[in-house]
Image (cartoon, rainbow, N blue to C red; front, side, top):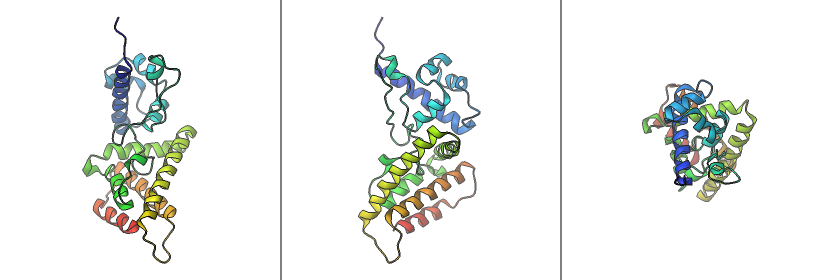
Length: 214
């Protein structure tokens, strides 16, 4: 029998995560069962559980914090840590959930990149729904809260560094760390508005954020 490669397991894992993202965004974490995810991925429930023992493991994997079962299935001794890029499975990368890789250029450009990830006009509705659910679920899930707040802090610190590099320093201007915290908090709120289909002036919000960071 041919040996099943790590690439095969990684591909199946990605299929499961893609299916889970779509279902979580559409139905929510609580209303999505592991059977739903298995059916959407075209796999058996047992195959899904082989990679992710629970729905919580799937959510953590979308945050880049849980490797699932691929390593064990191919003979590894520890689960590999997910390192998905923006827009793939890193659900918390937008709106302050933890997306260091999304930053680049000026602070204003970086924040606009994050904003566009949850802008429905740029196909960001699914991401907005996932981000909002992750932060909401983190209120009562200590493991998820630890992940979300740690990645938020890393993103905030990197954004603060970009603000400091920009060199703009007017009288009474907040510290770079405070400006970064404000911008990310605003983005989390923006994602919640998008997720609930609340009326939003997307361009106006983008201009306001740019002005704050300018």
